[in-house]
Length: 111
Length: 115
Image (cartoon, rainbow over all chains, first blue to last red; front, side):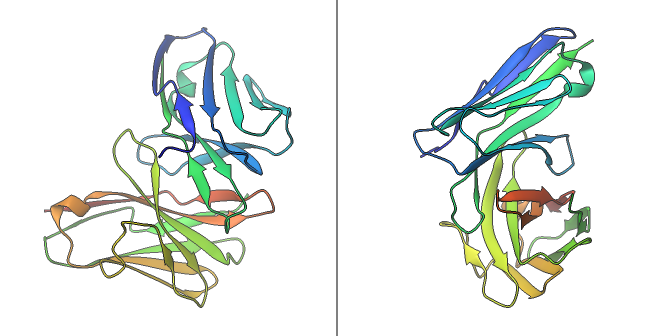
């Protein structure tokens, strides 16, 4: 059972386009994190959202946590080739620090 | 943020041998570390949670006797793949947990190839 559904799993777009990645669950999370991973490297934390309805911006990236803390989205404006990578959402449920990961979104931005 | 190192970054071993992977916290003493396995183009699969001074907690389906985890000091956790087989070939990543929001900081990963 996948507790955190992430979509789309693959996305190939042209430089300058906008995109949104979604993570959805029927469960409530105490916090949700977004990570970005490049091939052959470990994931790097981008942001943590904690409060329902919270919106955080990181340059061209906008992260939102759903009001009920069950879902989240990542929106990238004017994507650049450097945004290429695997994006992972992960939710925490106060279970000893364990995270539940989504399936990941493989993003390719072509110049 | 926290910094985690892993060693080795890649290793090739023969079938039947054992391989040890080290995960080290560099900037603060991590009580809890996590070990993941990742297949190409796939998400992370949690293998076990490692706490300093106690036995690791393994996820369902992960063989404890095959994937030995030791967390003898606050800064070091090790994963030993015993009697490795080609199907154990994978990317293994560790992380340390931090903060009330359960953020995790990941090591750079270890690519294991079993021939």
